[in-house]
Amino acid sequence: MNFWHFVAQNKFEISDLTVEHLTMVGISTLLAVAVGIPLGILITRRPSLQKPVIAAANIVQTIPSLALFGFLLPAPWIGDRAGRLAVLALTLYALLPLIRNTYTGIQGVDRAVVEAARGMGLTDWQLLYKVELPLAASVILAGVRVAIVISIGLATIAAAIGAGGLGELIFRGLAMVNNDVILAGAIPAALMALAADTFLGWLEKRLAPPRAA
Amino acid sequence: MAEAVIEFRDVSYHLSDGRAILRNLNLEVQRGEILVLLGRSGSGKTTALKLVNRLLGTPRGELLVDGRPSRDWDVIQLRRHIGYAIQDVGLFPHFTVESNIGLVPTIENWPKDKIAQRVANLIKLVGLKGDVASRYPHQLSGGQRQRVGVARALAADPPILLMDEPFGALDPLTRTDLQREFLSLQQKLAKTVLFVTHDLREAMLLGSRIALLEEGSLVSLSSRKDFLASPDPLVKKYVEAFGTVVELFGQRGTP
Image (tube, rainbow over all chains, first blue to last red; front, side, top):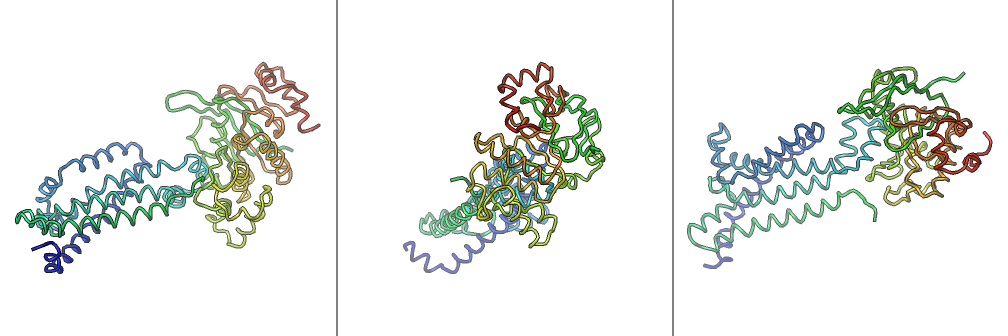
């Protein structure tokens, strides 16, 4: 049985698992964006929080993924379903690049621009959404891009706790010692990561503030 | 009768480590004058300026703007009441010239046609051609950027202007052009201007009065005419550093 034969025979399962994979990555990325970007903004306003927040996100990042799934298992509601557990773990991993890039992006806005904006009488809120966020957008997006690429890879491990996704095929292939089955899971995941990386890279360039030639 | 628009009464400012940046500054800026704060780097001139629009923390002493303690003002209202132009300009790189100049009127909810008209007028007023309106800051020369900076500071027609070495980064020819144009602009608009510089020539060209600061203290305050005659040794040092009295005074002719 060769690779294409396997894919053709199992195309419905593969596409279902791909959708499952995408859903996990999509939901976790949205959650991470919803938490990470505001946290990144918060630490530009409260410098005393910067070190502890970044350190916490860093520590999460160092926990091996299988162990993190294990640690989260006893959590109420979350632990009831493997899917929830996987989404939470992926969200936690995606936080660091989002927080860090939001912080770096906003700190990187030209001080003279910020001073002029304050001096003109922009409120904190206006400064944020008219000046800082647009100018930091490409750096923040670079964080989203890293987070998504990491998540797509990590989500394959979620199959180990029964959360589904393309990891299913990889683990099955490992158990069967069948490379074709492994590839049927690995190749779509890799393509997904490549596509996301390329698209977000393009968007990042579009959003970069105009600079002197 | 002269009327003080900005008043420093015994204003001192210390950093959080206790270092004094300004010591007991007493100074009045009269309506319609250009008061130049002259001093070397670290003399406290920029600090004095930024206390007026509250970009720094609260100082000791009393600072009045239009007769009202600056800390009693709503900070946003205070800043919109005061135009602010700085050496690095700080134009918004993601906005066109037009949007840069029109930002404060926009957030103050002026009607669109009034903003467009105001922006077009200002572009002309600061000596730019109308076709720069749709350009981005990185497409402008240094002199053009600074003109846009001045236009932006004037956008909502504030009665007071704070200017921190706005022409400091320009080449000498462009700088002289802008200084002269600013002077004639000021004669037209009669804004109250507090102007920071380390350049005696600039002070002599623009100032109605000149306040010399050194290490956070006011050393000398006099009209442009009397400044060079001051017996203060620091003033003498300045004059020596910048050339002869005649040369300096000749720039603007007789007052």
